[in-house]
Image 1 (cartoon, rainbow, N blue to C red):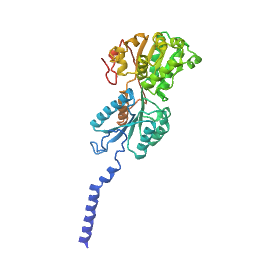
Image 2 (image 1 turned 30 degrees about the vertical axis):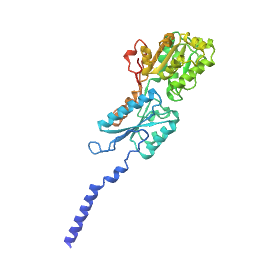
Image 3 (image 1 turned 180 degrees about the vertical axis):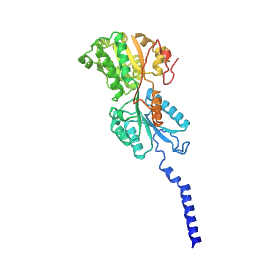
Image 4 (image 1 turned 90 degrees about the vertical axis):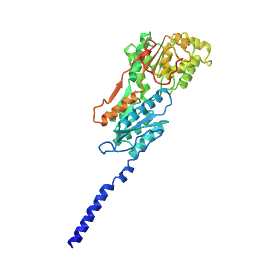
Length: 374
């Protein structure tokens, strides 16, 4: 009887040992990576010490123009660096539009395919989805386009100084002779927080320099350019067509929200689609043209080395400048998330200062996008 009891006891112990050794396989399938369009993910392999790596999803719009394309490139470079370090798995997920990005965020919430999120929202239509992300408990960093209603829930909101871009532009215009009530043409980006902040910075400086609310309300603005060169060219051409020669001559200050838009204006001035009298009125007005971002093309124009010669048009401008808004800031956003995951302290409102670039200092700055020199 004793022998039978000991045999049963030994069998039970051996059975428990087999369960303990073989129980790992079923758990890994639950942690499979959900992925997304155009993603570059690391595997969910155990990190040194035996714990599964935490997964960081980096959500950015697809490359629809130079700045966004540069953001995606910098994000992919940083993800590769993070994955090589071996502590975290970083995945870059691109979206074609806001609806696509909403679907991606809601999918990763439902399927728990990310432990942390870094996101450049497509636009403000993501507000409800970003609230769901905040409620899910998944830590997130917002980059560039900030959804104000969830900013207090974010680990950090990383952005260039959008208000500083507007302020620097207004200060440059005022130094060039802009007076309260003078005509100004504004060419905004889209309906996100970015143009709103750039306009706020611009208008605040005007108020500080004697502009009334009525005069500020009289600032002329085109429709949204969508940060697009072609749309900027089209809207500028339409403004010329709709304006009289006197109105064009009186408008000596143009605030574009992006270098792509300014390039659209320069391209329009070289085209044969514009009424010659109105084109001459514009070129002889002594226009101050302000842009922003740091596109290599605008830097090439400022250097006078662009393969498409804009020297005749630029020579007619009173001023051409670009205020910096570096797409490499996405790497700062990813660094902030990693610092937070590592238990470090992160500034929740992380604003990166701007610089004004013109022909006198352009050689001190590195642009983004393809080289276009002669």
